[in-house]
Image (cartoon, one colour):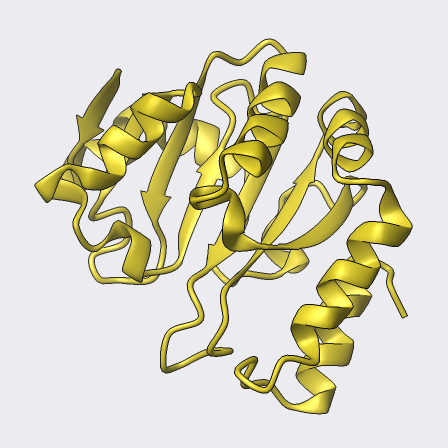
Length: 187
């Protein structure tokens, strides 16, 4: 199940939760309100890979959340496409297929916790960005610990993301790549 939240409703209904997790809109660690949270970088394949989505869902439920908020953060007006969605994959996919949300997978977005315990900034890799999408994931230890463990640990996550950075379709300068790795304290 999911509930659409229109852009004019976003601030009054979900703005407080957004500001508890994020202070900006860039798909970088600096956009997270809690700079003390650990940060990981992943390929955005959790959107279509059921196993990867399940590891994300398990981490979400480990902090007691059964829903998440998904909102656009790139297009004007900000939060044009937003919803409160159950964390089960079927609800998430149904929301992405809804004609109201047609453009959500094409623009950078934020996924975050109604409880303020985790957040994900998804860079879709469109023409103004990297070419291949990625996600910046951060949250409380009770969210990050099971997520990192399910994805094979910090070293494997770093190796996986470093491979993504070396893909010729990842259109970013060497400095941008170094800066992304620094977001996760990966050198």
